[in-house]
Image (cartoon, rainbow over all chains, first blue to last red; front, side, top):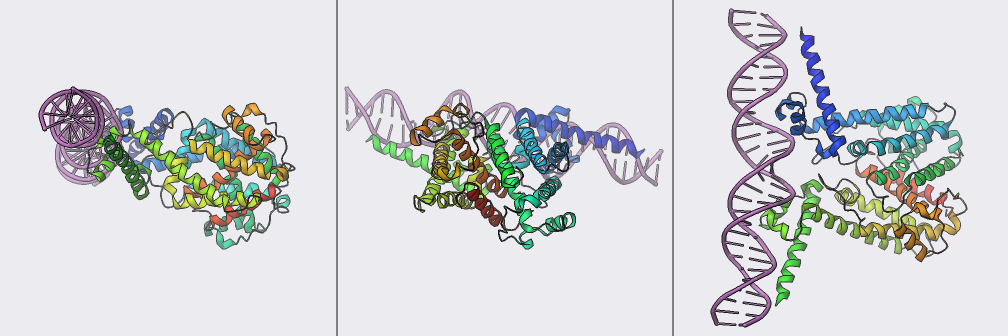
Amino acid sequence: MPNRRARLRAETSAEIKTIALKLMATGGPDAISLRAIAREMGMTANAIYGYYATRDDLITTLINDVYADLVQRLEAARDARPAGDAAGRIVAWAEGLRTWSLANPEGFRLVYGDPVPGYQPPEEGVEAERRACAALVSLVADAWPKAARRQSHGGHEWSDFDPHVVETVRAEHPDLPPAAVALSLRVWGRMHGLVALEVYGHLRGQTREPGKVYRAELADLISSLDLA
Amino acid sequence: MPNRRARLRAETSAEIKTIALKLMATGGPDAISLRAIAREMGMTANAIYGYYATRDDLITTLINDVYADLVQRLEAARDARPAGDAAGRIVAWAEGLRTWSLANPEGFRLVYGDPVPGYQPPEEGVEAERRACAALVSLVADAWPKAARRQSHGGHEWSDFDPHVVETVRAEHPDLPPAAVALSLRVWGRMHGLVALEVYGHLRGQTREPGKVYRAELADLISSLDLA
DNA sequence: TGTCGAAACTATACGCCGTGCAGTAAAAAT
DNA sequence: ATTTTTACTGCACGGCGTATAGTTTCGACA
C-alpha cells in the first residue's frame, strides 16, 4: 500500500506548515526556524529536509499558502457586493486587505516584506500575486467605463507590461487599454501604501485613527474613478 | 589630553557605522552582523559592545542616520523648486523618494521594512520620520488653498492625531484643518505604496516601466489636489 | 615621573541557527 | 526472504548575538 506512505508524508508536510505558521503568529516571521519546528514536532531539524529541500523552500511554500489565503478572502469580500457595484467591490477589496493585514501582520510581512533573514524570493512570481493582480484589473475594468473619463492616456503602451499579464488581460477584457492596467497597479499601490505604513508602525506616531485616514483615501480613490 | 580618547572613540564609532552600511550595501540588511563588522575592523565582536549596548542599538542608530540622509535629500529636491510651485515641490519630493529608494533598496528596507532578523523598533519614533511628516504637512499646506475644494471634511478631528503632531502642525500652520493632516498622511501613503511594491519586487512581474506608472500616479495626485 | 584607575579590547563560553554527511531502522518492492 | 527505498537520527561545521571574566593600554593626578 503505497497510499499510506503518501498520506503520512502529506500529513507530515502539512504539520510542518501548520507549526511554521503557528510559530510565525507567535514570534513573528523570524521565529520560523527549522530547529524550532522540529522541536515542536519531536523530530530532528534534519528530518524536515526530507520534505523541503531548504528553509527558503519552506518559506516560499508558506508565502504561497498565506498569499492564497489572503487573495481568497479578498475575492470573497469583493463578491459579497453585487457585480454591478464597481465602487463597492473595490472598497470591499481594499477594506478586506487592511482588515486581513492588521489581523495577520506577520503574514503581511511574509508576503510583502523581507520574510525572514536571508530569504531570496524565487524567480517566477507567486501564483497568488498574479491572481490578485488579475482581480484588481477586473475591478478596474468594471470601473473603466466611468473612470476612463478622468484618466489621461498617460503614455502607457502594451509593451510596458509583462507579456504574461498582457495576455491575461487581453483575453478577459479585450477592449481595455493599457492605461487601465497601469491604473490597476496604481490602485494596488494606493491600498498597499497606507496598509504597509500602518502594519510597520509608521502611522502609530502620527494618527490614532489610521482606519479613518484609510477610508478617506478610499473615498478619494472612488471619486477619482468617477464612481462616487 | 582626554580629547584624543574621545576622538578615537568617535572615529571608531563612525567606522563601525560606515562598515555596517557597507556590509548592508553589499549583502543586504541581513549582512549587518557584529561579528562581520568586527572582522572587517580586525577586532573582536565584543569590542563593539563598548560602543553600542546591543545590536539593535546599532541598527537603530543606522536607521536614524539613513533616514536622516533620505529626508535631507528629499528636502533638497523639494527646495530645488520655487516656493510658489506647490505641485512641483510635491512631485520633486515624490520623485526623490523613488530615486533614493531604488538607489538604496537596502536603506529603504532598513527604514521602512523589517530591518534585520529580530529587530524591534524603539518606542519613540525616529526623529527623521517626524521631520519627513512635518515636511509633507507643509507641502500639503501649500497646496491646501486649492486642494481644499476637492477634499471633503472626512470627519477628521484633531483628537485623531498624535498630540505632538497636532502641536507642531498648529504652530506652523495655524489655519490648517485636521483633514489636511489626514491628507498629508494619505499623500505619504500614495508615494510609499508603489515605491514599496517596486523595491520589494512585486511590480517586476507586472510592468517593465514602473517609473511610468509612478509618474501617472503623481499626475493623478496633483490633479486630485487641483494643482494641475 | 611614577602610580592608579578607567577604558578598550580579547578570550572563552553558551545557546541559537541552517545544513552537509554518515548511519540506522522500518517499510515497500522484488 | 532479500534487496531497495524511505524516514529519520547523530554528529559536525561554521555562523550568529551576547554574557562574563581577564588583559592591555593610556590619560590623569600625586
